[in-house]
Length: 327
Picture (cartoon, rainbow, N blue to C red):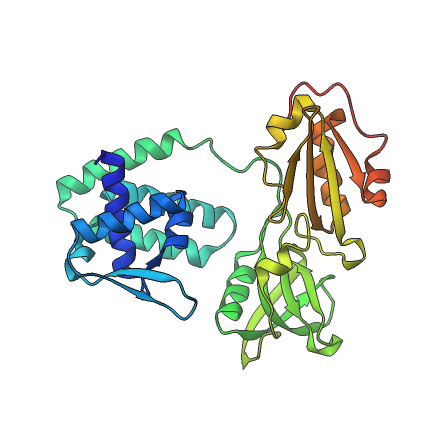
């Protein structure tokens, strides 16, 4: 067995031990990015190498493997790897204004360091800092709106309940309103997805940068039946929702841009169709023509909007030929 395969097997054993219902073949395929047959071989190796391996067929007819071995909780990643991961996640949370999450991540980092001998802690910090320094320039490019940490903390507290949220939105002197938060979409412009009872059951978007104050109330509520934030987000190309624009979107990338476009995940529902002439057709269903236009501009004349007609009209006349590189 190769070193990398051994690492994967140990990781699979830890997952099978820590997840209450175990791991299915489908979950192994997704977690390790392997084929169904490779996942089967991994479960066979799991049963061969580890004791306490058991499997059970669930109500969904999926077989799940579980490891009942209390010793597996002693298997930990190298300390510097965990500390690097916590530091990177903490920096990201701090940059996004999620002060509470950033503090929790930094506290976990300090707790992990405190478990080491002083000499090992110094070495681990030095190793982790060397990696983090080298990664210092790896940031999300482009401008973005700053979020108010106190507002974001209140939103997260409300989502945890879930609790109703009292906020002042829009103009600074706008009257307060009570909403029922269902999720948070983070991007170059972030939105709070919520229902405002005084306006009915419709799910609305509130720009987080226009929320001037927010307070989580001690009032719980029932989420909208069948609501899924992933499904809701998939209705748009970016974060903006416009039901009137929702429909099939079809783009054609020129042959010289097809390989590069094929590396992009433009939308979770996208379908890629390589054409005989070397071009690439991309299809998906979404709304948000303005955000699509912002993105398509980067491709210059290497992309053509086939549909919808409204988006095609917005893009025409702005497909430049002088861009020296693809996105």
